[in-house]
Length: 619
Image 1 (cartoon, rainbow, N blue to C red):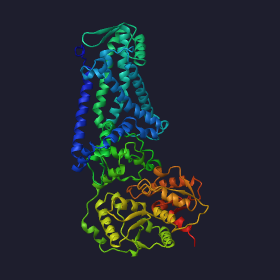
Image 2: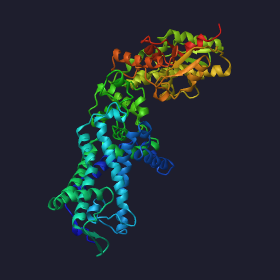
Image 3: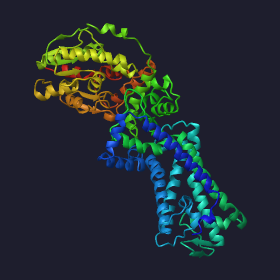
Image 4: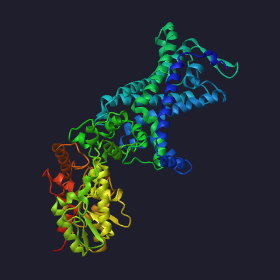
């Protein structure tokens, strides 16, 4: 057909880069998949014959190509990411289909698809205008490149206060990516310019060919117009001499991007797809680091969307420890304690992440790897501890922070008394911690011993309902304890149930309350409505600007083992300012730790939910 005899050396950089990328991807994915636990591999293979495959395909289309979550967060960023992902994908597919149609299914070398305009010189008068479609897609991609450049220097105009810091691999890959599409435009336009100036031949099947006369050119509205412009301004000898270098430049930019990709954030382009299939098969990160974690860390595109929600940076001025940098450092094997430990683990970044990476679990298992092993004698003090009192099918576990906040304890005592409930108090005079703070610091074994002790205690006293005022305790009871047959409730849920059943009848007053969603209760346990319904039963409810899934962290998270008191105070003040801005007369939260942290600012009176309910009870 005349294609092989017109082979050009400029296709070699593309080929070498593509082969390198293929080998690198196969090596990484095969080694990661082999490293999965046998049970995880079985889950994946079973999913291939289930409906989860179709769910995964749909998610790949929505998130890997259309970037639906990014669009919902920021439309300009959504357009930029979609042009690169969907635009480039469609450009490749249209080029492949054009080659099949043009050569009627005959096998041709792969480089013909990639460098079609050089080898075939498509003219825009075809019955089906592939050139028009490709030029339109190329224009969209060039606009995306322009937005990406603009974002690096004027991120605030793109709705981002901060952008990520790049590694050397990122810089090489990013520079190559920015050049690929301008290089393609230049190469195709140079070929069009040569055809416009001197004429040429369009190859078809067999010996058939068509002559293109000067003054026509090839391509469509973008490449043909640019080519005509170049033909008019460039001398003939420069025009002819410049065509091949332009195609060399395009091929080299492709090669540079392919070679740098495995060492850059752009590994997410290929890694997000297997992650989606594995996740929908049921795989999750756990307390121990696993091979599955590799898919998560490499699926991070470092888009930077998780940076702005981080209150450590926004309110405390702590930089370089955000999730995007944690994932970067963990991926490169350069993770330090400072980065791993300095995190509130509030879930705001995880909620904002368009890829759905389990940021907190990855933080947790990275801390576990750094924890110093201790001997069994450390836990000897647990034997025989039982300071519980009372009896009843309802058990109340105050938790460490509630015990340090006596007003909440007294309020719960009054609520129990008013409702007529018989309650067994697990730790009224002190007891054993729930274990979650130890778990969050990476002390998994110590946390396990705590959990075993408390579970035995609950079983021993035969409770059927376990109530706690601490969301930290609530979450660990629900996620990590084996409490089959025992219903675990937060005191907001329990109080709501008492009011709904008529066992508790608080008075409705005229006070206006601004409610603060604690991280562990809201994003952690998904409890948003129960405390709001309780507040509405006693007064008016005002919502903070950032609430529910996007609620601010109080700053005193037990998960952060590196932040200083001043940093915590500044974050707490920011929350208090937002609550005070609602115009409410008082703030209500449902976590003893949040209450203490927000109240430090003295900007607005702060109460626990149990306190305002107890105050509303008839004397």
